[in-house]
Length: 279
View 1 (cartoon, one colour):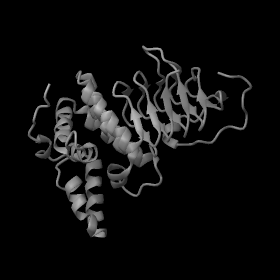
View 2: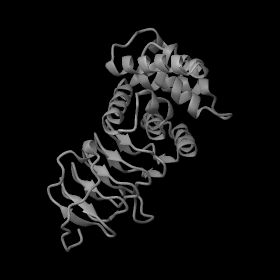
View 3: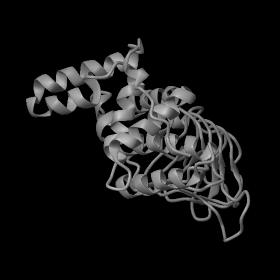
View 4: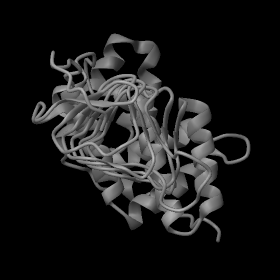
């Protein structure tokens, strides 16, 4: 089915979002501080009426290529946002998550323009919409481009919540039947994968507010409970109780309960006592 050519109605209606206002102010300041970037700030942010319009432009200028031009990518994004406004709402929650959890950022301009994790996630959200619409080939094209550009490989069939923070992004892999809850934080090289060649429901289910440290591998159709913490470099092969911390290869329980909101605090430290059993 051909992509409908929509008039960019998202351009016409200003948006009152505080985050959008913050993003515009940051772009205006950047234009003054770095005149060489003024045209970029205008094209990507300042010429648009709301976050959805700017986001569609940003995704298109990143994912467009010789096979699928930027204009076509933008039309796909606009169609997705028109049918499902929740995509833009999720992007706003993701942007808020970066602002709250990443001490390195100076303004919202950085994640919106430059952070691979945020950009890959927003491209994936459009790919997921395509997947649900039955347009699997185009969805997989988006996945391939996102993987090539950002080194973040999320299958369009996965289910991913909002308010996510993909810190650095490089090397993150999320399989087709994985489920990731709201407010999750994960660092680079996290894998949510299977344990073999079997088909069906074969990937992890990650609860709300979970923190997945750098290089953590969660494998198989297992549940990591809400507000759990998986330490960097761990290999998790069995379910993790809600509110618990696990670490090691294979992962062992370290502490229960853990920090109440690990994905928000981004606290990667571990308790001194390690229980002597494998989960």
